[in-house]
Amino acid sequence: MIRRAFSLLTLVLLMTGSTGVWAHQKKEAITEILFNTRSGMLEVMHRYLMHDAEHAVRVLINPDADIIASEETREAFARYATERFILLGDDGDTLKLDYVGQEVDGVFLWVYQEMPLPAALHSLGVIDNVLREIWPEQNNLVNITRNEKIQSLNFNGNTEWLQVEFED
Image: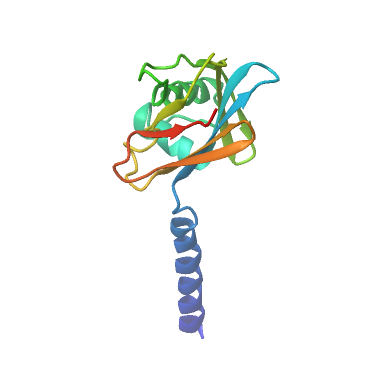
């Protein structure tokens, strides 16, 4: 009887322990780029899972970092993310995005950037290497909304740079 109870307990512990390992296997982030004619701004909103951001700051910044409790650590992650996300204009020059801030929303950490809408832009190059040097399986999806049309770019594997063309 004791042996059977021990075996059952061991099985339950193995099953619950393994769910922690398998619960978060998909490494992904989503970025929304919005050409907001109402505000006159190109708005960039990055959404990261807090779980991923927490592990990233422990690898990149400090093994004891606490992204949930520390505003300073969240700001450090936001700096890291904004340094690895780049927009390129028609001529290949980097578009200057300003950092707006970050916020926690449940299981997500949002990082915000913006810039005035470019006068004329026929294409947009995107580099999104956030978290990809930590996890090779990291997938970063970028959705670009301009004139009510959405175009998507998917950064995975060895993809480092992608571009969308705009119809005028």
